[in-house]
Length: 381
Image 1 (tube, rainbow, N blue to C red):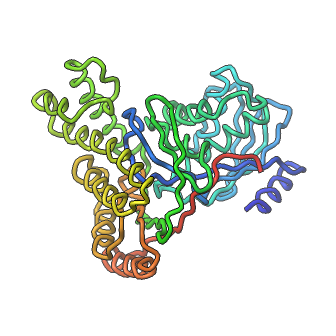
Image 2 (tube, rainbow, N blue to C red):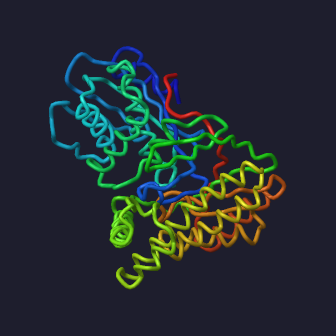
Image 3 (tube, rainbow, N blue to C red):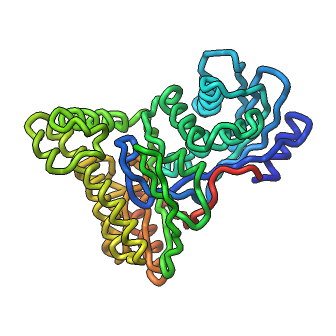
């Protein structure tokens, strides 16, 4: 990938660029808790975005997306959003840095990636993080701290791409560390690295190839449900800033004041916040059976209470149980994408073969299989 990017950069701009990269992410547990001020437990992975980039001495940003063979440019002074979807991420990052008093000048860039689109591995966050990290290094002498860079990526989603996401994806992409998962408190920004070297197990992603675009889905409606439930609880318990601050008992107190749908969404979130803590405790004991059982509980909640699963994801989850997979759940925003599976080494080949065969028979196309390794996040190469 590196060679192809540099060759294209040289053919377009007559010189080599400076290389930067960032990563997609998996989230072992803690789904839809980030925008509710709860805990998440992600790690960066060995799939990511790479860019060659160089200041060009103008006010123009000139971009080439190698995977799509598409060129776009925009003037940094312009407030008009690019028409194509993918340049909006780079446009947003530039604008959010400038909004915070940072510096961005015109630049040329060629980028490519191997994060599968629509699989729930955060290709958009990897793109935002790559450019945020590069522009901070090139124009700001790394004066903007990494947590603020994550917020820049999050604000890009909110203000330019129409997705009211939490901060987890951008955080994992920027803070990822090889061999470690990160427990992040999305309310306070406190985080802790947990070594993740599960001996005798593999992390396997099975991609349904059912594509989601979060802005076009019910993602934002889930967030509104949670905010309504938190507001109802806050009337009795003013200390509840986010839904993650609430106790299950407090949710029961307002059951008659909110819709059944809002109640179920909130029930899932409150349970999921606790499951993240339970998984962290289990990992410190090397208790992967408990980790796996929590993953299955999360899938049940995402499917039945939060309703962000789909037929294909539920099929894979049931199949994982049948194949004695230790843990399995839908990963990412939902409405398609991947299941993440914690599989014993000796069961792995059988599980993958069975999943491919039975899924293909049921849905008429093969799923994609990804072995993932927990890797480093944003960096200059």
